[in-house]
Image 1 (cartoon, rainbow, N blue to C red):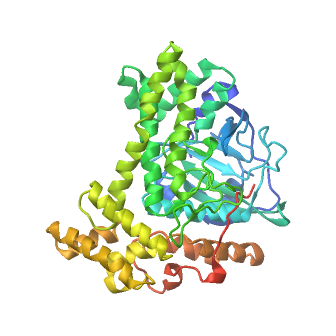
Image 2: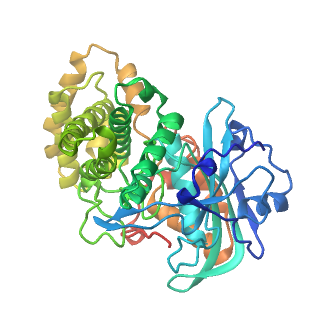
Image 3: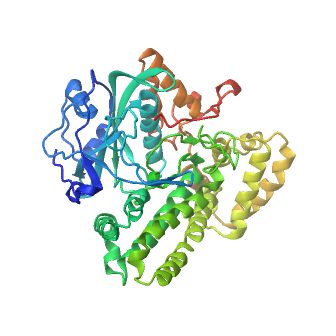
Length: 481
């Protein structure tokens, strides 16, 4: 494997050089071989060698492991030093298409950023992140990826002793808004500039040609983040912990913790066990995205203009693009979900009216849009009072007819947009329970395989389509730290 570690060539104040802490008896659960091929990784064939590699027990030539420094706003409160307290960036590889990717272990032991934590991960969060991140990729949502997961042969203590695991993730980059905040909080303008130059060189080279590359960088990150959150909401995803230290500069989903997909549509739905005030609820995600971008803009003000007032005015003006950009992407995606071939305010109002009826009738988010794509009788049967949905169906049918397209074309568009399968919370919990309690990973593998093709009906998969029974409903999810 040819590692080329650009981040490790930054000044040492950006990270701590540290090897993963060895574990007692690692065993391989799963390797994502198709992703390994995309990354041009020449992996060993032996499971023991793979377990050693993906547990951090074996650090191969060319790796230059580091724990990255960053700060962050956590639920609105600023913490000046966070950093990789249970993760190590092994290094970077160049994929088959010439793109650079980071490879990181999560649960790899204590670093100087651990803040009295054990630096380890429980097995449950490892399984959850593997399942959800790969499902998000299959759904077309920009995301970090899952390369491998292992058990450690050790117990970690949360509410009680549970099996430990280590997750190997791949990302376009792991610089966060909080990375900029770390240096801005220390008034280290040169480090902020150095980091911004690194991000431009690696992720946004087009910004180099702008009159002010740093303003253009901010604009591009805002646009990428707005588009990302629109893609989350299209599939009913709730990140759960949108702190600035969990917000990627690349416009990718990172740091899957108390994340979840909605079952019944509830616009202010919260799953995270620590989000007591609903800060990161489903419908708050665009506002929080803009809030996080404001935090980034504050870090970059010194690069916008030497005059503080002018710099602030520039930042405020650029930040105004965020909500309109989000709305455009969200409108486009949601109008497509109901079969419209173009998006406008009237079409978007049709979407909003449908979602209001879904909320009032306690209708499942994913099933509603898929049944609308496939079978009108099954769709209307989802509503407790069919009379409440009939006027909407009439208006929708009229709009679809005015498009002048065949029903087959409309249905194809909708079925390509509305998934059959999502990683439902109760199915993830079922897989985790089997793994933790019985060392049985068959449900984990089956769920991962089903979610590889979320838009196509698969045989003998009805259990993965159905919403949870009342006794199966998952009301809270957890970070696992």
